[in-house]
Structures are given as C-alpha cells and as structure tokens.
Picture 1: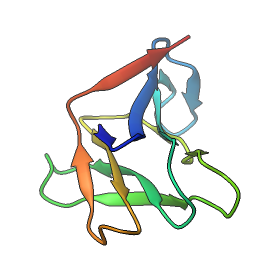
Picture 2: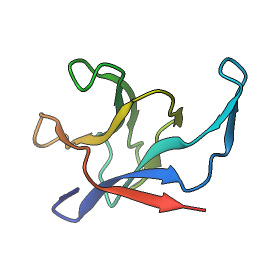
Picture 3: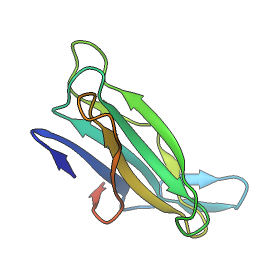
Picture 4: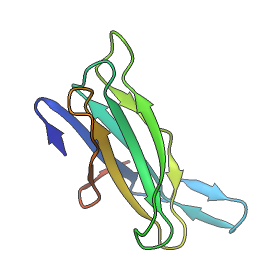
Length: 105
C-alpha cells in the first residue's frame, strides 16, 4: 500500500518459525514495515480473531530523523486476519490493506 513516496507492507515468514508453547505448534509471524515516511507518520499491524469484525493493533510512529519503522511481530494461530495500516500526519486518517502480503525467508 502506498501514499505518495511512502509505503507500508505486510510481511510474513514463509516458514513456521515461531513455536507457540500454548498450542504446541510452529506458526508463522506477521509484521509491517513502513518506508519512505516522515516523522510523525504512524504505521500499524492490525489483526482480527473474529473474521474482521473487530481489530487489535500494534502502532509504531516514525521518529524524528527517520523514514522507516518495523512493527512488533504477531503470531498466526487459528484464523487470524492481518492488515497493514498507516496514517500520514498530513492526512490525519488511517488507510489499511489486508490483501497484499510479502513473504520472507
């Protein structure tokens, strides 16, 4: 998802790299990387456990002198939905996308 020159991308691991002690399974992790943004812009990893009815989130704000940021990672279990979101300081509202996922590993 892009805004001007900036971008926020949802990433996941191709392999199941996180061992969940509660479920006894290896799971994928998801995170968002925001790039070419300006200080005060906010990037968020949102996830839903109820088929996108409600969302939880992990925000990161672009610090002074920086142009990129990575959110904390969240493990995938059950049927979670994930999306990348950002809010440009000049816009003042959120823009989200949960269709494009980039893979690593």
